[in-house]
Each structure stands twice: as C-alpha cells, then as structure tokens.
Length: 404
Image (cartoon, rainbow, N blue to C red; front, side, top):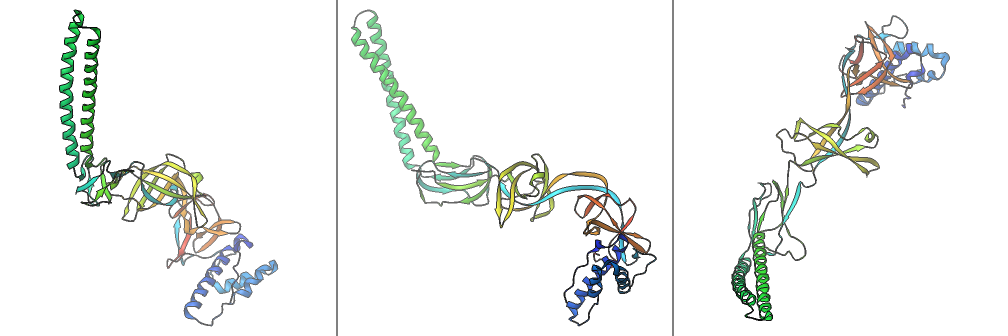
C-alpha cells in the first residue's frame, strides 16, 4: 500500500500536533508491518485523502484523535508525558565549515638527494623511515679516480709555483738591469712576459686543485635537510651516471613542514578567508585536535564526480608532540566565529514544515507546535533567534529515546 505524506502546515497551528503524531504513527506502522510481514492495515490513507477537502477537517481531526488516543484538554494540544523534554538555555554557538583534507608536504619539505658525479656506490647509510640530521652522510661513492686526479692537481700546483717563483726572481733581475740600461728593452719585455705567464699558470693550477677537491667531496653524499628518509632508489655496488641529470639516491621529508589541503565545497568557499582558524583530526590520533591557520585558497576548482571543491591550505600551528605523515586523511573544521550566550536547542528538536521551522513546546501534559526562526548551527545545537524563551521546555524525543 502506498502512503501519501500528509503536509503538516496545510492546517492551522492548533492542528500541527495531531498531524505530527499521525505521521509518526504511520512511520511506526510501516516499520512494524515490514518486520512482522503481517496483513494488518492502518486505515489512515482514506482519512488523509480527506485533507484535500477543507470542509472535512473536523472529520479528519476526529479520526486522528481516535487513532492516536491522545489525551487532550483543547484543540491544538496533545499528551506530552510520553516524551523527553529539555529546557531552552543560553550557550555559545560555534559556526564551522567542515571538509575532508589530506596532509601534504610544504614547498621545500620534500627533497630528493642525488649525486652530482658518476661513480660506484660503495656505502649506503640510509634506511627507509630513519631520521637523519642536516649534514649526516647518506652514501659514499668510489673515490679511486677522484683521489688520483686530486694528487695530479696537487703536483701540478707545486710545479706551477716553482715556475712562478723562478719567473718572479728573473723578472726582478732583468728589471734592475734595465733601469741601469745594461740590457735592452726587448730583453726586459721577454722576462716580464715569462713572469706573467707563470703567474697565470699558478692561478690555473690552484683552481684545478680546488675543483679536484670539490669533485672529491661530491663522492660523499650528505643530507641537505633534517627529516625522515621516505624512499631509497639505489643500492650498494650500483654504478650511477650523472651525465644528463643527477641520479636520486634517497628522498627526505621534513615532517615538521607539513600542511593540510582541505577540499571545501563550492557552497562554503565564500565563507573562507586567509588567516581563518581551523582545527582538524586524523584517524590515528582521533582524540587530538590539531590547530591551524588558513594560508592560501586555490583559485582553480577540483571537480570529481560532478562535485566542485576548492583546495584550502592550512598551516599546522602545533603538532602537540605527535608525528603526522603525508597523505593522512584529515577531518577539518574551519571556524566562522562564535555567537556567545544565545538561546539554543538541540537540532533534533527542530522540525521542518512547508511554511518554515517549528518545535513542540511542552506545557504540563500537553504540547503545542510553535514556529521558530533559527540562526547558526553548532555540533548538535542550533541558535534560536525568535519563537522561544529561556526556560521553556521543548520535546526532543520519545521516552524510549527515539526521535519524534
């Protein structure tokens, strides 16, 4: 049997309570019929069909009265004794935008360490997951050829220095003779040229030696930053070639330079601004709330399954002694602000009708539907702008804990 949902607000405010309860009874009946697979019929469809005829409302209300077995003392009220109530109170309402995010390394937090020279890997000190400090050795290349070149350049420097010293002393002698006109100007020029060439050769030898020392130092690969080894892409004994690009040995990530990429829905992105505060949790530390600050909002959208999101980057302000890692899923809450000391009720107590939101206000053993104007929503609570007063009792659920 197909049920047609009865529109509550087609009736006066005095009739709301009857219709709410009738809808509730119908839902309970459907559930019982499915579970028991019985042939019982709840003869409410024909009654509800009469809701289309305004002149038959009296008959409709009477039928609902009999079906609900309501204890009434006047039109628009019903028995509230079987329901749990709560008092309307003041509280702070924090409005937030929720989003799902991923922890990513910041720019400069992930470094691929490679070799600037070719050679054979003789030692590999890095292991995946190991923490390394800045300057710590990562790998060592074979230095046999480099050491030979270094010794050759050292010898070349000694030779160049000897040639320079001789050319210097010879030029000084020739200069003294030239001042006394004992030699020709041409002979002095030859001496000065030899000195100039020897000086240049000495400087070149010094530069070659310095280059050989640098090349020798390249054989020792060290960590450029402190962090955790994320990957190792070479092994001891392998020959690496740096002819066209530097081969990558390991990848190091600084786990203190991470950020959250939150995927904010297009309906909420207009509420996000730079500097906004945010909190997030990760599954591995579910009880810990990490705090952060919005640092960037990507202009390009990320579209997946026809859902439009925008990436909002959040700087992590405090790691709270925990170790976060890239690609962890983060549950993000971006704070929009706080409305302090406002009237608020449980969100579950607010019902939706065709003409707006309403709650059921308890008065002794009866209750009355009352329209309300709502404001911000917090976790489990909603701000009430108008329609209720502090201390009034509203119905939130049945006595057995089920929502009405």
